[in-house]
Length: 154
Image (cartoon, rainbow, N blue to C red; front, top):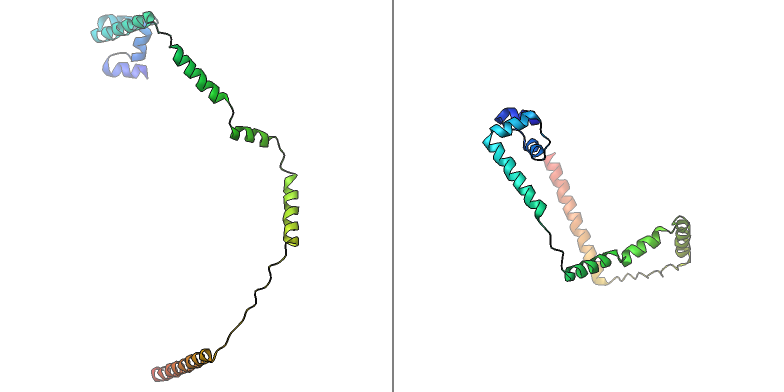
């Protein structure tokens, strides 16, 4: 893949140029960098950056930062209630509990008294009987009319 890029635009791959900066280049790459101003500039900037990184010193963090970080780390290490329960429940075998739960469900089903039946009282009033008689008469008239229509059509 690097050779394909080098052939397309005439310049080596940036990874190859980094190898040159690190002193791991072959003679072909060395000749190219010495003769190409763009690649020479890239390598020069890269080597200058590396030299700046070599002399850069990092300030140690403030003590307040250390104390705050230590507090956060200790809080993260403290197990919560959920993880304690998960660990405790993981050690329990639930296989014996299944038959016990089934036996308990059967016992509850047979020992729980059935609810008392609710008495159903039907109240018939003369007004209700009149309405039912009128509805029956209306239904019979409708049926007779449908039969007459059926005879006329058919």
